[in-house]
Image (cartoon, rainbow, N blue to C red):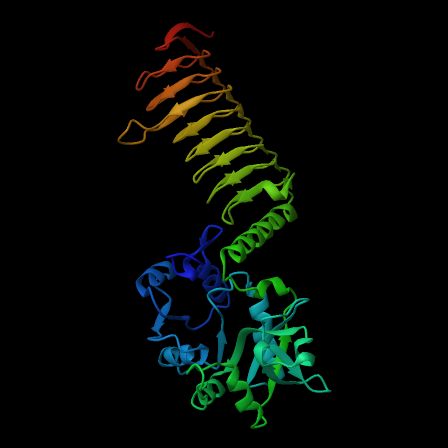
Length: 402
């Protein structure tokens, strides 16, 4: 990765790579999740959560050795053990669930998740007999020309019967050249003892792609992002240009809302029905747009609510604010929410009109149907009354609406 950060802590979208894998594991409601960690243990533990067990592999001596490090943490009542990898963040719960069900229905002692790749170079190949039954795995470097033409590859994701795994671990021998122990050697040992091994093919080969470089990290981020966009579109959200739209997985968007290009929607943003967002809009954490809100070009909203029917179409910033219904926010409007030491709250009530280039210095309240004139600055604690019109720098009242 050419980075000081442990590989599995590199962010894939809003969370570390390993968190995607752990969330997939959690979705199966297992009795226990154990992660095997080599270096930088404390940092990885902090990213995992307190419910995740951690086993230490003192030296990186291969995948079977990693499983040996975890064996003492495996509950004795567990029947099946699923092996996942911290650098495969694209795997989804449905695929692992199907792997487990295929394993149980086949009666095999181990089931291998495989994938069909058009370019399988670098991956171990799945060997099958004339009847299509699994007979082994051959590593790419050890394969002959015929075997290298096989497109079905080993993903490294497995479901074992507990006893078969533990028995096989006791018989895995280290490679003379590297001294490493590999899980794939268990399959040869089991097969030579006529133990049934099953292979289940993943529907989407993208899910099992590992991340081993910044290039592959970028590709994984893009796949995760596009999955999220697809979920929103399936729920009735119109996304004009998927290539330039970024929406966090935790965001909620109502149907018949349109998201225009170059829009960035962060964690826990909530958008209602029939809204218009963008282009070039940044909705930061805590932004809430109620139904039929319109926010447009070069607008930024953070930790604020815009109530139903409010318009904020051009080059404006709203932070730490409660904006009421049917408020017109003029071009260039800014809420100055930070005084250099702390942030303050702004309230704009229903039907207010905020003129172009106006500034509200928080904390301040603008009343119902009040008007803040173009270019005016409402200083902190100088509230604008219901129906009042203020203009100037600093803003002063000129009249009240009847």
